[in-house]
Image (tube, rainbow, N blue to C red):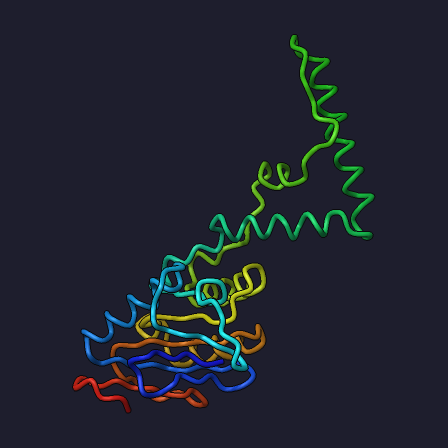
Length: 223
């Protein structure tokens, strides 16, 4: 996988099959310029970045995730939960779970019928209880790691890559939030998840083993 831009001489190339690149942009003007353009493209708007894999152009908004604020990643946002419920619905009606699912729906109908007998109203009860409505009613969500930003990020990457099919995760100044050892562990975990990682930083820090480095210095020169 590689990321290119018409104004950049160098290509950001991710090591096969899954790797990490660090893009250091020391110039504040260029940092904001490229970051805003990348943000716009992850939101589905036009831009000059081109992401490709094996010479096949990929739609940035569909296959990449830009994380500007690691403290505020929402492991249970609407898009994730909708995909989670669809997956759980498939599992509920597969061969292993079908009978249990039907039994549960029958018990619910029986429960509401008995409830109707004890009230003074006639109730309309659906013959076919929607399993998705049950998931929402009981509040099924992904478990959060509220007190650990590192564990929460790892879980977020696993869930988003699987449910939303994201293959590139872009972190902005993540090295201000986690130490080098945690970052190495995060990269190890993401390799198992089969995704690529792009670290965008506004200053050079310690070098990371097996991480390709791309630099635009304060004089706007590419290194």
